[in-house]
Structures are given as C-alpha cells and as structure tokens.
Image (cartoon, helix red, strand yellow):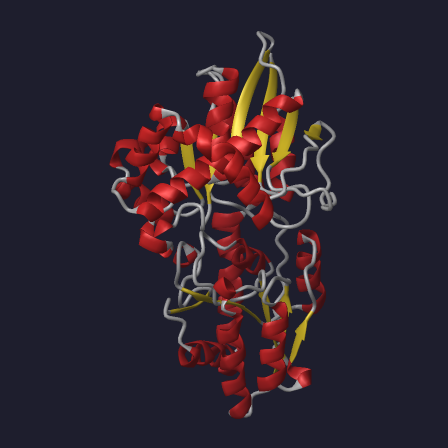
Length: 421
C-alpha cells in the first residue's frame, strides 16, 4: 500500500521560517512513498527558498494572510459559521466563558481555517483516498494548520483511519503568554487529533495538566540538529553570536544593553547577530547608539545550512538567546552542535537543554540587563580549562538530546506505524 503524507506548514518551503523542516523532511521522505506539502500562508509574491525531496510535491496555491486578506476572508466565512448552531456551540465550549475576546478569537480562527479549507478542496489538487493508499496528516503547528488537518480528516476525507498528528512549538501551545492565557479551539482540536507532540517537556506537562481529558494524546517529541562540529573557540577576541528573527519577542535590546555595560567596564568583544525581521531598523539604531562600530555586526538572515557553516568558519565563543518565549530553541541546539556554550533566558523548555555548570548559564525570565551582562562576563573571565568543560558539555548535550538523525528517524517511523494499527 502506498503511504501518502500530507504535510501542513505555514510557509515551508517558501519564504523563510520552519527551517528545521529542511532536515526533517528528508527523513520523512525515506519512510513515505510521497509527500504533499501544503503551505497555508503563502502570497503570490513569495518564492521557493528550500529544496524538497524528489518524492515530495508542493501544492502551489496562494493563501495570502496579510491584514487585508484576513479581513476579507473573515467577512466571507464568519457569517456562515454564525448561522450554524453546532459550530457556534463549539466556539462557546472552547471559549469556556462569556469573555467576548475568546469568542471572537475562536470565530476568527475558525473563519480563517475555513477560507483556506474551501480554497484547498475546490482546487482539486488534494491526494485521493483510495484502497491502495494510506493517507497521513501531519501539521507542523498546533494552530491553523492543525485545525485545517481536522477538517481534512473528518469533513473532506471522512475517514477516521487517517492518522492526524501535530507538533507544538511555542506560540501555538504556550497560551500563558497570550491575553487571558487563551489560544483558540484547544479542546476541539485535541479531541480530533490523534497525537499532539510538543517539542519540550515543559509544554507537554503544562498541556497535560490543563487538559487532563486528553493527556494521553500529548507527548514530547524534540526537534533536532544534524552534523556535529566540535571545535573550541580561542576567545581572542571574544566572539558572541545570536541568531533569531529581529522582533520584540526576541529582546535583542537586552543583549545590546548588557554589552554596553561590558564595554563600559573595558571588555573587548565582537557581537554578531544572524537574522532579520520587522524590528531590524530599530535594533540596529540602538546598537549604533550604545556600542562602538567595531563591536557589532548584523549580517542578516542566512539559510539554515549556512548558519552552521558560519559557526564552523568563525568559531564563536558564546551564543546568547534572550527571548521572552520558547519551546526548546533549535538555535541553541545548533550552537551546542558546534560546541558553543550558551547564555539563555530561562523560558519555555530552554532549561531542558541549557544546564548551568555543564554547558551554559540561564538568566531569569525577567531578562535583567545586569544579570545578562554578568553571565557573559563569566565566560569572558573564565579559565581555558573551565571554558573547555563548557564547550565539551555543549557538544555532549547535542549528541544526547538533539541529534537529528536519531530523533527524526524514530519520529518518521513512529508516524508510519500510526497508519498500521
């Protein structure tokens, strides 16, 4: 029997983001006969930016999601939902109260999903479900893509034998960082997916406790990083690196202000940030104001494989992550795979891989500039012997917890087995 995987993404393989699928999809292609990738947030102007395996096909439909498109889709689809008593009851049950924010968020969420779903089924491009094919549905996020997966399984295919699984990362499962600690349609999606796989134990335990009726569906499945590269920095000069989208959530202002303190204390360093984003201009202006021109560099976004090559070529001394929210940050795993010790904010599942006295230092979630500066200073002043200990610990953590070959091989095989029950 042919094994057909439908992979639901936000952008991949277009545009940017979901870089970690670049590795995972190769392992999926080894286990499935064919993969249909359906990106759900692609505008007509976006270009393919990532390679996909020979046995994968991208369903090339535009689903633009800028503010105007979202408003138009909402106005088209929301009235039909509001006239459907069953769906209104579902929205109310998932709101859990009369809070209008929760009701409206659920309605928006359902309407946005419906708009994508209707375009998709009317395209005629979805794989056929026939006796010679076992279809699998894999949502990369526990958000719109997972909601779309439930509609494909139950409404379009109408086949309960189709396995539907979803990963959960950060924004899509950590509702406590949202207004009213709320994310839409949680119970509805949990009741209809076969498994939800958060990437951290922290998120898994939180969700199991919050939704005990579905705790047996929730298990951690970590993301991974391949191709370890053990080399120890000379720290002369101290080369500090960060890698993330440049936006408020990532709090790069904390790194800049901490480095300004170290500059005032006479320390010599170079900070390089890899990535771009909506707040790039503001953050670069802050760096220009507070640091000397030779102390920092913004090199923009690099493809995932080029980030690792940059680490190899430049041998950074320290990786710093000051994000306000995380699952288990793959950027930290990438640094550890190159034997780079880490200073990171203690948020989400970060503490599951960053271990003080072993591979790095944690700073509190309040993101104190003084604490961040002190942590970086510790690595500047550290003896070569102690620094080697941290570098070896970082590399060993990657081998033990984040090696993609082990993680993604097992994950792909486990997914196949769900269709054999």
